[in-house]
Every structure is written in C-alpha cells, then in structure tokens.
Length: 211
Image (cartoon, rainbow, N blue to C red; front, side, top):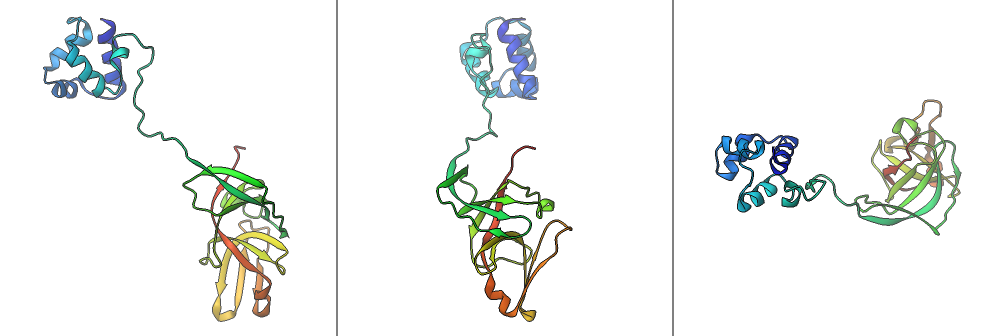
C-alpha cells in the first residue's frame, strides 16, 4: 500500500465516508477507489488527487506524505470574541451584603452575553441554580423582571445587594425574594417596605471556575 493510498483510506474511514460515496463523487468505479487505496494504482492523477483532498477535507500534501497531520477542516469550533464587562462588586447569595461598587475592575467574557455589567456572587443561597460562591454573574440592566427570574436587587434603602428569584404579587402589594437553597428563608416586602428596594437587573449568565 502506498503512502497516498494508505492516508486516503485512513482519512476516508475517519470521516465515515464509504468507498461508493467517494467513487460517485470522483466519477470512477468503487474498485478504482480500492485500487488507489491498496496501491495497485500507485500514482493518483493530479486532477483527482486535488478533488480527493477537498472531498476528504485535507490537503494534497498530507495525502502525498509531505505533512504529518491531515489539516482537516473543523467546522464546529469557532474563535471566541471577547468584550469587557464592568465588575461592580459583590452581590449576596445569602444574607444581603453592602453593595461594593468598584468600576476599576472588568471581566472578559464572550460578546454573546447580552449583559451590561457583572457582579461577584458571595454565599450559597443560589446553589440550586448552580450559582456558587465566587461565581461571576452577568446582569442585564432593567427595572423589573418576570416572576421566577433571578434578579440582582438593592435592598434596605439602597445599602445592600442580593441575588434572588423575584416574585411580585400586585394584589397583595408584595414582593418575595426566594433563595435557591432551602436553608434560607424568603425575604418578604409589603406596602411601604416596597420603597426600600429596587431591581438592578436580570441575571442572564454566570461564569464559574472548575471545582
């Protein structure tokens, strides 16, 4: 078996392409393909070699034995485009903590994240939403969120921040902030207490280290 024939066969099988499929593409018989691969025909015509390389998503140089790797085209991997997101400090995944705004810090993340800023999670109240202590949570700035969505909320007269699931009941003039950890009690605001907090935005993504 020639180097070209061997590499041609290995590459074809690697891609799961049958000899019949390759033969049909090249306009030759199935037996001719096998003769190329087995080395019965040692020299593949230049015009066919170019066509074979393209069809097998490799290079002529690889098929000829001049390259060690196939140089195959990988179609499901794309470069990640990054942008800077302002890191505005920590947000409690537990009891509310004092908002710590630090506009000097930034987090690099993919441009596919449609957020305005990010916050660093602190605590374990959102573990069932897979948000752990130290994770970076990306927030889309908005004044209201839908019931059941995770929101970054400023409470206690603008001094503290927390990350919870948000529920608003207009008929009861009530907001309930629920943790994703059964060991934490709900935070409930009613009537005039509703003046003591506001929604910073909706949590749309998080970034976590491998643990």
